[in-house]
Image (spheres, rainbow, N blue to C red):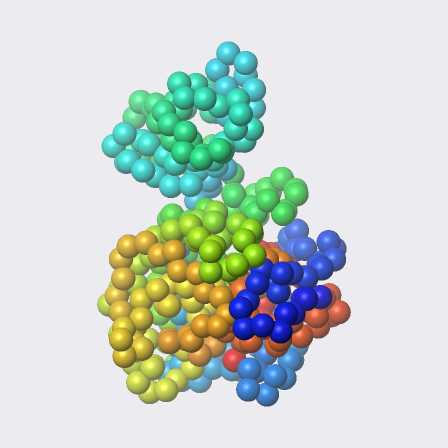
Length: 358
């Protein structure tokens, strides 16, 4: 599996492994909280196997779960190029200007799409966009031309857009994906990928946690496509993360810092939450409020200041997400856990099973 090098400097090749294709989760588990849960104890290095709903057994009163309440919007559109009618995929990345309806997008195939081209969307071509800038090889700035209010425009976009399932899922989206590729607590729209560790929580499980006295703190990190970008430089210190918008309000800060003071279990639900927390640490290792952008890249070795446990999915080889969990649990323990997950036929990636690291 991983090829480990006996140096202190972590390299990209340290985070490679062979994953059998049949372990990629094309669909979610039938019920959210009945996916599998691997529990890893960092102190004892013990690995145990449960169902996700058993998570509640690891939490006591006044412990805290920190969740990412970002909401995925239907970011994948299909349009036709003027004159030729060629079918073009447009992936909405972020809104640049509300009044002018300017959006940062990726187009595919990109070589056909030049500045000045118009794209038509919908069976009746009721939405039109003009390419006004090239940003990267596949990146473009589009201005949407639409007669109507901003609310009507967003409704139109949502109606035409598809759930932006990750590219590794080869099937077409189905109606169920609209609900299942979204956490039950999603409320602040702005992500183009789901914070997947949170997909395992059912309303019932969250309610049971609350009844037990577990506190829930919410932050918002709008997950960008960069979360899927494989690292391509062997020297990890040279890798640049895409920026993602992060909001941590006073209410979340108060809940988390109180738990730090009481030395309680503080669990980051997902790598997005962990990245958000580590982007906003005070000089005395407490959490600060935050409103802005973060491009924090966490890889071993890293001292984590806020969370002392985390829920996460099983990640792709050479991904920044795998590097982060390796920094949190130790590379050798994660290697052992992934070896076992493959042997036990756990499901990997966005719709896959979960891991709790204590």
